[in-house]
Length: 258
Ligand SMILES: [Ca+2]
Ligand SMILES: [Ca+2]
Ligand SMILES: [Ca+2]
Ligand SMILES: [Ca+2]
View 1 (cartoon, protein in one colour):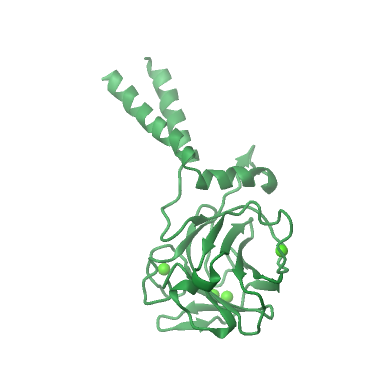
View 2: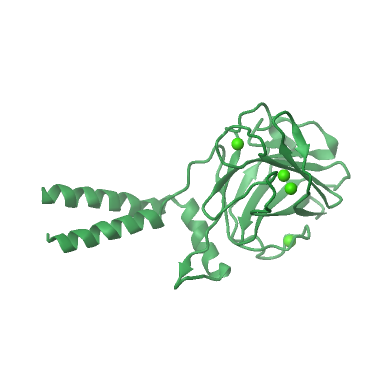
C-alpha cells in the first residue's frame, strides 16, 4: 500500500474516532443529553422534550419518575417528571452540580433549590456550606397533571457568575437531584444518584453531557435536524463499532507496512 493511501486511511480513522468519541462514563445511571429549547411553563408539550434522553430516577413511592436534560447555545434545561398526585407548597427539588466533573465537592460548585410556586434559589458551595449566591440565576415552572409534578428548569450555560457553573459544548457536568415530597426527608429513594447528597464526594452524581450542534459549512445545523442523531450517538452501543473498526484498521495497516 502506498504512503498516500495509508495517510488517507489513517486520517479517515482519526476522523471517525473524533466523530464517534463517547463521553466519559457516567458516575451513576445513564448520561443525560439532548439538543433543544423547551418552554419553561411546567407543561410537557408534545414533542418538546423528544430530543432529550430520559432516564428513570428514584424508587419506592417515587418509582416511575424520570429526569431529562438538554441544551441549546444559551441554556441548560432540566426537567423532572416526578410521581406525585398533588403539587404542594413544600414539594421541593434540590439540584447540586459537579461543575468540573471531578467527583469532589469544590468551592463554587453550583446548586439550586426549586420551589413549587415557581421560585428558584441559586446557591454554591462556599467551602463550608451550601450558600445562596449574590446574584440569582435560573428559571423554573411546575405544574401537576393529576399524577405527576412536571418541573422545568433553565439556567445559562455560562452566566458569568463565579458562583455558577460555566459550561461549553462537549463538557460533562455532574448532577445530584433530590426530591422532597411534601417536605419529607431525603432518603436514597428520593435521590438521583442514591445518597448523592451525603458527604464531600460527588462520585454518586449522574452526568449531563452538554450537546454540541454539528458545524456544517461553518454554521450550526438547525437543532431539530440534529437532535435525533445526537441522541442516538450518545446512547447506542452500535456507534462504538466504527471506533473499534477504525482502531483495528490502523493497527492492521501499520503492521502490514512493517
Ligand atoms: Ca414546557
Ligand atoms: Ca466538583
Ligand atoms: Ca448565580
Ligand atoms: Ca450558583
